[in-house]
Length: 342
Image (cartoon, rainbow, N blue to C red; front, top):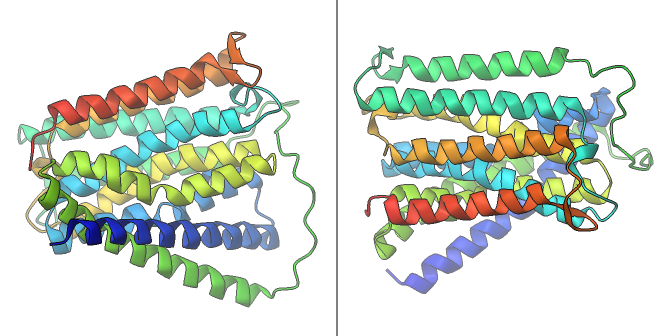
């Protein structure tokens, strides 16, 4: 197969996801305005869910059509690493000061819940590798149900959480003019963008398998690097756009909220579609290492919000930004040298 053609497809698929993902977020935000939903809810729940559709579609195609569960797990954990890295990127883009100390406690709660569910996934993968696992309905791991339960519990906690009195949420966006588009058309455009995003995700699954074949790299590495970069494109586009509008809580809430959805929902759905048994027993244990790196990066974000460090390397960038980038690079190097080749 022509190597150049594969990379052309990869670039075209990336462009489709960026375009569809940006439209998807736009109409989700617009619908939220019509429905009277809060900005935090839109960022952590609505946007995090819809912008994670590429990861979901890629995962389903990877386990059903291609039969490569490591592709989807690499995509899930790799996407989480990139989402956390993007926080460092938007911190640099926000020129009015250091971004993390400006975020509200709701973002801290979401990030802490992300640490919890990521740690649980790492433990469950480790246990499943030693056949310490139970299956439900023939092949679905009990651990997948537990991850879904943790996700639902996390959403309930976020929905019911009330920030301390006097906490100012950073949302300086000007009030948009009332759109003339009807609600029914908003929904139609939203569904069209969602369909395009899903198609792009399924396409990515095939491209990822071809990259494994032509490069000889491991499925875990390809999923964590190439697929994760592409499927997180909607989150990147949405968050950078939100920062430009000074909707900081929405921008970061979208990123840390995606961590919850990727692990709690996508692993559960992938396990349902994977018919060869418990999916946690058939993945490379290297994903546990990736999960630990994600936990480390989430902890840096939480400390950056709460501690409000004074050490800035530039007028607008803090030391925690550099640490996030360093940990991500360390994760990629570790996977490159430790992951088993295809």
